[in-house]
Length: 523
Image (tube, rainbow, N blue to C red; front, side):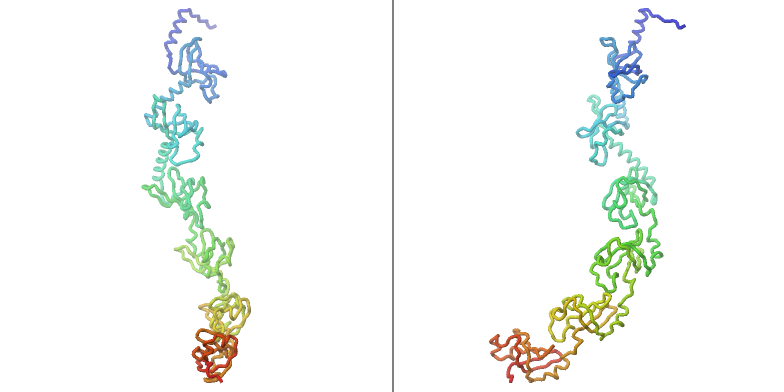
């Protein structure tokens, strides 16, 4: 049986004095939680009685439990009720300031939690309250800084005034130092041809910036795909984690060039064996320009189908008249320039060239019939067959009539007969004639009109220098003003267009195709 120990009053007083001598107000002691109520937490610090700490001083730590050890500051050994007054918050503050002061003097990194956003920055709990200016958050500007509230970050203390309880911290310095070390390590490890994983940090029109872990590398748009790429966003998106190839780097300028397409073989390396000249292939129309269409044969391989290689005979004003975007077409390989990565394609070569046999099919002198497809200032185009056109030049429409425009003789959309005058397969040209279907009336005009003959004709035109008189179809003569009677010169009503008059032949010139007439001395 344990013997009960009894102390007399003298011994109790002595023990009490020893206990009082071992603690002092303002001292921080470690105590044990013995009881928790809704208002207070009772702490045993080895004194004659427990001390009470308001539960609010434990902040957001509802997990505190009986038996836990905590540091407390002795505010008063005995109050009027004989109780010990303790403060956990003040103990934390004093310890916090000691820790912060030492960290500042040593230049150490401290951990802290961003508690709230205020004007110009944030309040941060690093054991004591500190101020984090917005400019010291990060190197790169951001419009979404309030997302930091509640996050734990690493900081460097850049200013401390303990007397004024003023602490300024920076997370940017920590990040920059971390990035510098990572960048130096990365640059020391880099090799051309090396594969590296990174995250897409930003996208521009000319490429994407890839964070390799401390250093950004440029993935240029031309190094993203062997295929045609209009914008980097077609290949990557911000936040994507990708594997890239190191193409080149400059340690001094801290620049790294990256590639994505280089992870696969260049399809142009074996292009000549895969697409021999003269062979046929199928591809998709991926771009249409005024001068031709680009055909994708496979990933990274595009060829140009020039507008001149689309038809042997048809006049194509724009490739869209023949092809549509995304259309699959068969093409012929015409030429390959491996160095410049160019392929020339054709589709007209899939059909026989009608110009090769054109001289045999339409020999000179052949009379044919066709529809007038188009009229121009210089002639009329006659549609023959399969898109072939022949041209009747304006000079071959009439033997004698002075024609200002082909529409005076022929009409668009109407069928006409013509005779083949010339055929050239090299120049892809067929010259036709209309007037040649009838004999040239000027060849025998000197047999029908002799000097001093008096003939009748119809006035067709009156000009300042004379009168034109139609003698027969295709034959006109000119009576100059000097060969008109006085009354014809002085009076414009003497002769009118449409009048049939008698005239005398003065001159006949086959070379110039002219007949000179006179209205004087006509019997």
